[in-house]
Length: 83
Image 1: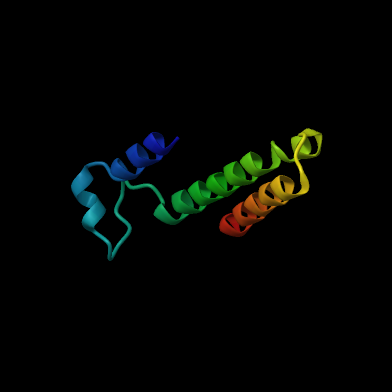
Image 2: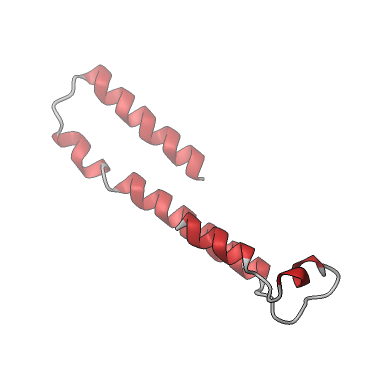
């Protein structure tokens, strides 16, 4: 996915030299604000999905209290970095 995003940013304008015309929106360029907004939304959705997948499995694991609290702290830390 990151390769696709990088490729889309690199080819944002056709021809490429139009990307430097920042004072006016050049013809042949993608809408950078919409592209970055969509990219950010996809990244946040992926982070949330990766956070939620293992949560139902945590109670099934055979951990002692100390190990379990470490796992829950790890997931809480992930929530903070996502938000």
